[in-house]
Length: 436
Image (cartoon, rainbow, N blue to C red; front, side, top):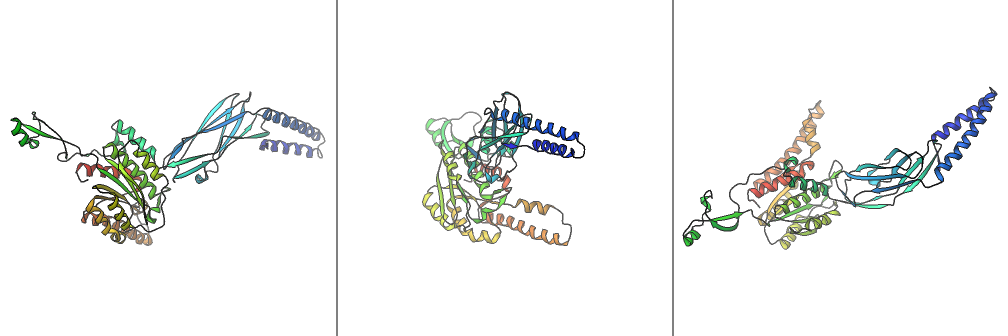
């Protein structure tokens, strides 16, 4: 039981009336009447609130949350009171959100129920614990408040962004992927995988005529080609200290994990096989490439508990283990970050080694905050010096791209927010140009 501000205001008024009786005698009588009414109202309010359990509440939310997306949580509040009540609802959300003022106020009529909806955006993967639902009910008298403890504590697992996959899937079904920025890439040249030989019909490309088969059949025959399928696409995710850098509350590792999941989904829709490798100072997770229906769930489980470490990344161990596990030429999409040309040159030998056996695409990040700072005009001498230093850092990133291209290594410099779309566009471009 809790006493409300209305009770204290009424009590203060009663005390003033009783005290005023020393100056004006009739006020003392009025104060006694007010005190009697307050006591009777307090008893009546207590009876109305406590003669039955009148409030029931329950939480409805998904069994797992999507990292970096808005996840909907619903609270169902139902009243069993045969008269109107006002309620204040407090949901004990996981402490990681630091939402200490998440409360809702609503008015319920007799035997009425209402549903409250709010959204949570996690920025870290892991297990999040919800507590109980606290509901404070008051009647129209408003002198007392009864607290109800409803619901049960529950743990929610936060997975990499699977809601993004749902958006891509729906837009792919309606053929509207361009709304997300995915370009339509015009295919250059012929398809590379042989399918069959068929009779020549008017309109077939004469360059596909199979002269040996035509000589045997004494009529023109042409080769039919189709898109090359079942190519292996591996996402290599660096978990070293350089991936601790954050942007809008999420680390670069989280952005890389979300992008690799979306890329794997798109690759499997293109009949390619998707796999996963994570590494830091040691070779960590390896999920063999596959296009089976359950592969996406295996990738989700493999990415769910990945955390960035503070160790230096060992590319030599990565090369050794990839040579041991990968026996077929594959597209390796490496998610990492380089602070400058010097840090890239330390790993260049290993990148060249990977690129000789496979097709390597190095994806690293452009500092979006640095880019926006460069765009602002300097106002005084100190800011001119700061702009020069900022432009030097930005130039070094572009220099890394040109250096990798000079050594025959594909690269992609992008911002964290555009990572998924840019990686998919690069994959489609490389596939159309037959660079895999």
